[in-house]
Image (cartoon, rainbow, N blue to C red; front, side):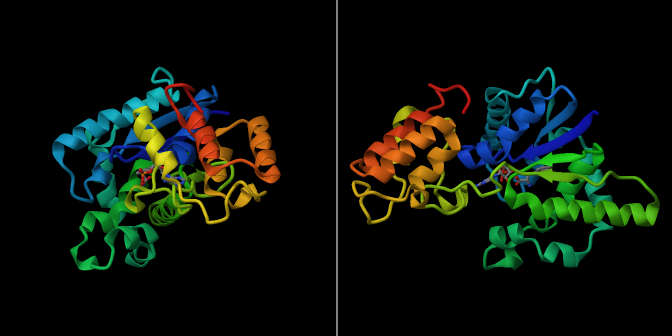
Length: 283
Ligand code: AMP
Ligand code: TRP
């Protein structure tokens, strides 16, 4: 049965492995399923909830589309478009903002994180961001929304908005479901915390080899040397390797950790080989 899929990515530049493994990889799989009708949106109206440089924003919109296509999303099969070019998104957001409740928005952790300590100075757009996201999804009757784990709260609010609207006005919107990546974990960054630009712990997906190597060599490791037998499950390098490598290589590296005699430098080189986009077209 045909399934309608919708997702969005902000054109904030320098997409990283968290974006790829947490979201875009899922987009590609959904795009490859003949049954699905997929729409992937570059959400520039969401990006402007924080200050942007117009020239950079324009470039980042193109870069995001290029990343979609380079990742394997087929533009002949899926719709890729820019949010601000369809004014219905802003219009629907206003109508839905009259349905959404302040109490729901007050609970949003992304707002709390992004607004930081001085909430008074945050834009109203940053606060009502989830309502625009609800508009994006509900406008297309999307049933499945592939996103990273950090967006689950926003999908929940989308369902709340849709349910409340349907209750007041009669059956109008489809209640969407989130689809998150397989292992349901945040993709860890170079410090082992959730990978995100604001934490400055990213490994970017399109980097010249030298810069990529530098990011990977910068992964924090603990003070127990890898030369001693070590449980690979406690290592930041291995955590990322596991996400990129095929099962057979994962097992081989796991055994090397457990046998001892291998340095962190060696493990990082192994990871680098898997993360080098120019060598392995898709992970
Ligand atoms: P953004 O750049 O914030 O628009 O994020 C684009 C997509 O990447 C969203 O679906 C996020 O949930 C996902 N994403 C970003 N960082 C991570 C991470 N560290 N782990 C999993 N998913 C992520
Ligand atoms: N809020 C999402 C993020 O930061 C981006 C987004 C906007 C989105 N509209 C969407 C994701 C609709 C899925 C569906 O990653």
